[in-house]
Image (cartoon, rainbow, N blue to C red; front, side):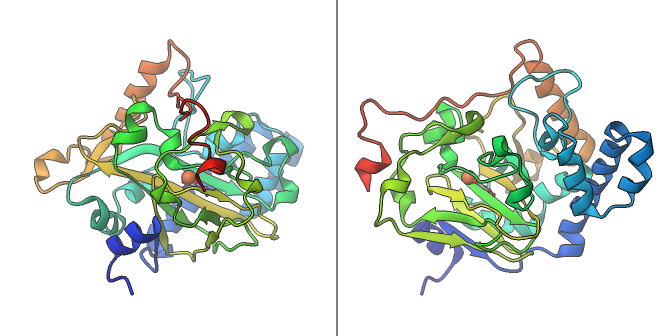
Length: 327
Ligand SMILES: O=C(O)CCC(=O)C(=O)O
Ligand SMILES: [Fe+2]
């Protein structure tokens, strides 16, 4: 058996660590803040006649109601980073105290430090994903990883060139609902973290996607199921996707990321800041207000050009690094 987190992580390209977080303490505050955002959206978008009825709905029904209204970019109100494109001075994102507290959560950072060591920064490649049962998802969003199925990819593929190779990045995937095959857990290609960066293409809605995986019959895949309280750490080269939510329940998760301090975040100019160091003086972001100020500053840098970040597709000359040629 593998003795510790680092050994498991290096061997498999991922590690699931059970019972790290406490639902009431660490996770419920975020769901409560999401419920608060939903109420704001009801006040803004729902007709006077319907408002009272909708405000009384539970979390799932209220969210589904809002989806049916066709509010443009609904997922951005719940996402924990600025939008990639069309950024304006009013661009909002889900930047609550509860999210900042999760990023700084000592229980998470302690586990991540088993892999990255003592000098760790928060990486701004981070997302929240509220996935309804697939039958409630609009056709155009079926393959949008924030609300539907996530395409096959390596996390290094969503970083800029500097980050793709040089940065030691660890993804920390956090379920807010029990996540199984039926409700769309992630699926990883066994041992794929040993392949290095492979060719990606442009997928649905401009996402990066590794194409050609379906045609490989003998590929071994591993479902990454998890319970509430668990976390899953991923290597940046592990090839993974997520399955459709075929259940009747929601599937909610967040993915935070961390890298070794001093390395590129791979997503300039979004904020990256030290969350752990032997020298406490390196930890300069201690309060929610300081954190939010960093995001506002990076937003201001992007306003003129209207986009926030780009990820140049990892592509290599010829087809040598196509997954179909490697496996
Ligand atoms: O939760 C998902 O659908 C995908 C998550 C993912 O790709 C990640 O956390 O890197
Ligand atoms: Fe990913």
